[in-house]
Image (cartoon, rainbow, N blue to C red; front, side, top):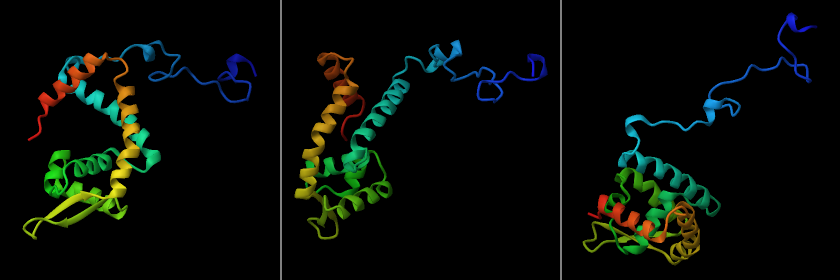
Length: 173
């Protein structure tokens, strides 16, 4: 078969592929930075992009320990606020009660969190168990390593400034 009889063949006998566009590394446009139009330089879009990068890193770090970022957040908040009402914990996490309830159920099933009657006996409070406190102690170095990875390009002053700025944007209520 000659070149004019059909598509060229690769050594394995399959027709050679035409160069692809888009994400193909051979495509010069694929290596060019992606523009973000009017979103570029905005705080909200920058935070969203940074959050996605950070959450992927944190998910990967927590996975070997059987945790997700929401599970870590729920346990951490409960441990830091013994007796906190489930609705306040959900609010602190930025979740509705219906989304937080399965997280609390899972933490309780793992023996990391317990529900106890509240002061008026109609409400419930949440407490981290000793096993929950031990899990947080185990996860602390994982979390600190994650923080070092995501702030590696920042100076200590920039890291503190960013933390302060984020706190100002989302103060505790």
